[in-house]
Image (tube, rainbow, N blue to C red):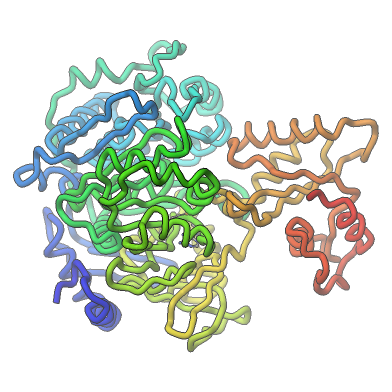
Length: 636
Ligand code: WTA
C-alpha cells in the first residue's frame, strides 16, 4: 500500500484509517519518503487547541525551495516548471525550466539580500500574474523572508493596511499589468499606498506594461538591471520547521483583515501530499490552476504544491473572457493541459456563453477537473462535466480555506465516486465534525451543522500575525477544543460532506471572501450616510452578490440617489477594491434592530434574497415598523 498516491477506494479507506489511528506514523512516512530535510524532526506534532498552539515536525531544518527546485535539478532540470501564458494570445508563452527557475529564484533572492532583507523580514508582493510573482515568492522562501502577497486588485488603502500590519519594509511591484482589454496601473497605487507606510524603504519594480511611471529617488528601483547583475546561486537559508513561510490576509467578519501565518514544514508536506492526490498528478502531466497567486489557491496549488511534485504548472496572466469566451479552452488545447482547476463563478459565467466556444478546441488531454472557493451548484457541475470533461474527467470539488493551507475535503479522482455539489470525503489526516448551536457534536449521517475540525493537520495556519488573541477567538472559541471553519455543512447517508455556505458575516462573491464590516465601514465614511448593513444574496454568476441597506443622515432631502450610489461604490472601491462594490443599494429610513441595538441581518438577508413570506420571529425588534418599509422598497 502506498500512502502517497492513493489509487483505489479501498486504499483510501485504509490510508484514512491509518492517518486517524496513527497520525504520527502516517505523517512521518510521508515526510520521510517524499521530502528533503537538512535535519530530521524530534517530534511529528504536538498541539493544544486551548492555547491554541500547533507544531509540526519540530526540530527539523529545511528549506522549502530546495524541495520545490533544487532536488529536481538532477532528474528534471530541463523539464518545464512554469508555463507562462500571457494575457495577449499573440504574445508567445514562456516555458521556464527547473534549471532556469533555480537561477531566477537565486538571483532574485540575492537582490533581496542586497537590500538588507534577512530571515524573518516581511516582503510585500503586489504584482500581476507574471513569472516574477512566482519567482519572488520562492526568492523570499529561499532566504527565509516572509512573503505577504497582496492581490493586485486591492486598492491603495487596502494595500497600505496590509503593509503596515506586518511592517514590511520592502515592496515588490510592477509598472502595471494586463487583464483582458484593460491595462492596470500598479505602481501609482503603490505610490499612493506608501504615503501611509513610513517604514517602507525600498520598492522594486518589474516592467510589464512599459507604462511610464514615476520612480522615487533612493526608494524605487527597476528590477531588471539588478537581476541581471545578481549572482546566480544562493544558498538556501536553513529554516526551522515552525518558522513562518508567509502571511496571507483574508477577510474576517469584523475589522482589519486577518494576516494568516503559515509555517514551513507542515505547509510543505501537506500541500505536496494533497496536490499529488487531489489532482492525481503523474510525471508528464501539465497542470493548470486559473487562480491568482494573490489568493491561497495560487500559493498552494500554482506555486508550492505543483513544484514540490516536480510538476509543470501553467500560470495565466489574463481573464477567462479575453479575447473571447473560448480563451480557457484554447489554453487547454494549446498547452495540452491534463488537470484543470478553476472557480465555480468562472464556470457559471462561461456556461452562459455559446457552446461553440467549448467545441472549437481539443480538450481530450483533460484527465481531472477541479473547482474551489465556493459551493458549485448542480447546473454548473453538469455543464462542466458534460462540456469540458466530456463525462470522462472526474470533477474534484475541493473544500478548504486560506486558514487550512491546503485542501481538506475532496474527492480523489478515479477513486472517490463523485456526487454533484458534494465535496465528498475528508482527505487523510482530516477529521471533520458537525456541531449544533449548543456546542455538541452531531453524530451519525444525514445531519447538518457547523463544520469544525477536531484534530490538527500539518498546513493549518498557526496564528494571526500580531494578534494571537484574535486567532483564538475566531477559530477556537465558538466550539471548545475544535477548529471552527465558519461554514455550515451537511453529511449525507454515505458520509459525504456538502458545504452549505458561510454561517458568519463573510460573503463569498465570485469566489472572493469579503467581510461585511469593512465594507460597511467604507460606506459609513460617506458624509451623507448615517448607517449601513451589507448582506449577500444569491446571484447567477457570482454565487453571491452584495446588497447594501443604507440610511442617510437626511433622508430624501433632494439628493440624487443614483449619484449617491456611485459615490458609495467609489468609496468601497477606494477603501477595499472593485471586487467589494455593491450590486444593489437600497436607501431606507432605518435598519431593523434588536433591543440591544444589533442589526437583525437575518431579516435583511431575506429581503435581499426576496424570501419575505416567512421572516421568522421579529418580536424582539425595537423598530418593527421599518421592516415593511424595507420590504416595500426592496430593489429587484
Ligand atoms: C468557501 C479558498 C463550498 C468556504 C480556498 C470557505 C467552499 C471559504 C469550497 C474559504 C467548496 C471554499 N465548496 N465552499 N469546494 N471551497 N469554499 O479562504 O466558505 O478564499 O470557508 O479559500 O470558501 O475561502 P478562501
